[in-house]
Length: 310
Image (cartoon, rainbow, N blue to C red; front, side, top):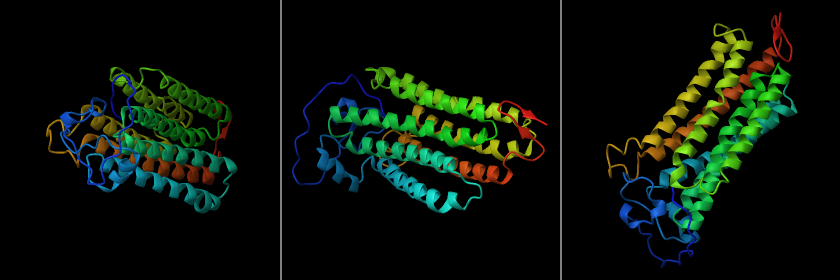
């Protein structure tokens, strides 16, 4: 994610000579690339598409941002194949719905990784291309966050069909509203930076409601199933809060301006923590699915659509 100003159409950059790509200091780059004054050097700028791609194989202040999510994309692509062909088929009681919810989760993660990597590769092309990829980057974040809810809501309310439908409908509405909100002409401008951050925080906060409801339906905080899974939810939120804190407060480069231009800046920590959070949540959903397939809706409780009846 990055901040920007009002969109102004400019000509595409002209091809540069066949030589090493120049890296620029902060004061030399176009204003639409100026999002973090604490990163003082290592910027790519004025590149056409060919040279944007070539810049993948050189060290710049975007290298870790790019490769963390390229590798993340390929890892979630591997998991999509692994889950559908080697994991879910061998879980007793698995159904078509299990394939669909995990495919939705991992495709959402893939799109988030792909759009983010694309944005960081091509942001140095021109202002027009910058804004196109910035919009895709934000849409990818929205999809990644929203698809996190699909398997978690599906399995959390596995024995409560009406509630499961209600909360999954809420996830769909949240996704549509988020993408629609991003169509606003001022959404990509620097003036809306706080609103963008508030939007994504609201998307994350949505999960508190179904989580609290799930704890209540399962008998409270002292129940074994709650003790097993709520810590996983807490870890996920801690990772998300850490990622947002690095990003929002530009830590640690705020305290070491010009010293973390290539490695260790806040945006790089944001990227790495997002990948870790996605991996953690995928494993948590797999764990929960296996638990439910083993226990189903049995024990001493028979569930209805709304409340447990002993």
